[in-house]
Length: 577
Image (tube, rainbow, N blue to C red; front, side):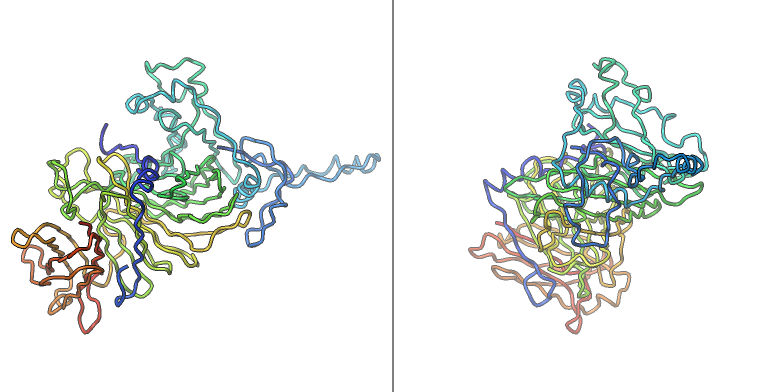
């Protein structure tokens, strides 16, 4: 398996979180933003009498959704039926000269309407995938090839996007419906086995006809003119990944998360239908609509995708819970962290310096504080929470960008994108939650960060959310304070205590001059904090030891200040014996 093509849709949470919780329990540490405190299935479209949802009505009544029958597309939904025509000759003659009503242009409200209608009924299972395709291994699945000449909009050279469709099989067994919107009209995009090359794979003709779509990916001239590069991929549950110029696939996003790292088991609602808007000639963005369907909720999404040096995805979503939801994750990002120099219990003999898609969680808090939390591959499930007010932004960041930082010719970890979330509107009270799951390899995503509302979502009551995503090689936001560029952890050879080294850098040399370190721990004692210039980086290095005494866990916090004001990011670290 190529490491750059790891099956990203398999989070470690799905594979082992429940077992880990039952075996070891979950540790929940609340880290506040205050500097003075401790750091903190598919049913388809509805029948003809469904009206567009009143999206501003917070008390949308469940009784307004009629009984539905499965259809292929929301394009099949019509407006209210016409009144019966009277039978007298004059009326009939008049009616014969009246133009037939035309379908309303496609709109996001139609997807919202469909999600609302589906939420009032039990989720329906996907059409079964042929057993032979479901039995594919990873290599066999990758051999199925969608023909390049069949890509959507290929003949139209003025459209700067192409859509390539992905087949079902291997781990991608849910049937996904696809529609193309052109001139405001949505039409189903049918599956055709003739558009795929199956080579000598063990599929009968009947199997090939029944494979169907699992998702799609979009290409555009992202890195150079005339060369079509991957831009975004939607495949597997509600997972999607995007690229910016110069990056390779790494971290993933999802439409939503439900009960991540919960003893009851995580739920994975899936995007079951998409509507792809044909861009105008020379368009800079592409719009995708999606219908989410799962055991506990439905949802309608609009994605506006703008590629570039930083690829921007503006997301709007409306959810319709089927039941009361108490463990919802909004704007979840999923990534992989295996090890790096800041892993104190590395416990492997890997020749590489570091292996991770993301190395830290970065947060911009409402109080002006910037937080940097190095990620960990813990020995047991860890859950951390940060702040109770929605941050101005948060994301999983890959700061080390040199080949020597990883020494892996195949995986190119130095090119994995940063993913940054900027909330729009009022997300309400809750917690930014980081889940870190033990992993023994680099093939499963074991990091999840999301916003968890503190108020449960009630069944039948719509919830609207919006945010902007930035996928980039450079850091997506620039803090006005010095950033943390390295964390290194080891054991002092003389005292046998844990020793920590933190490098701070800034383009403003005066910012770090005469800065004073502030270091604290929830348990134990900080020993000999020292700050000195780092001639290799031009920044400053803070070092200290931890005397944990009898504690098995300590929450560490450090930053640099001047006149009691922070001049650096706040460093957070969870140490375990």
